Image 1 (spheres, rainbow, N blue to C red):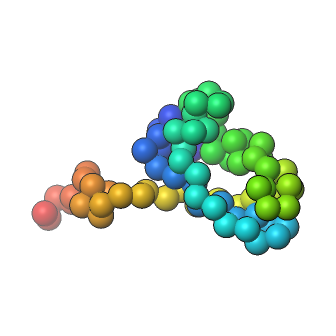
Image 2: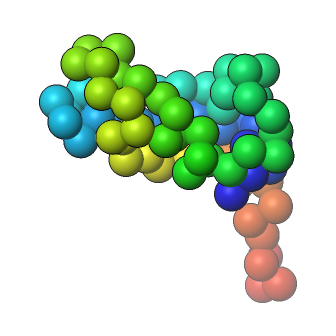
Length: 79
């Protein structure tokens, strides 16, 4: 997934070395990297702020905001 396509989301990150968890706005990554960079490639470049391990994080793409906004476009034919 390219960062530009998820610019209004966050990455939920977990360091696989020490277990530290954090939430990072994708817009911050786009400002530092290019929007065409994939989320996987961006995460490989991140360093844990707790233990210093680089490229050892797992991640999930997370929407932070109102649930109504998250569901825009989720309607089906039956709705």
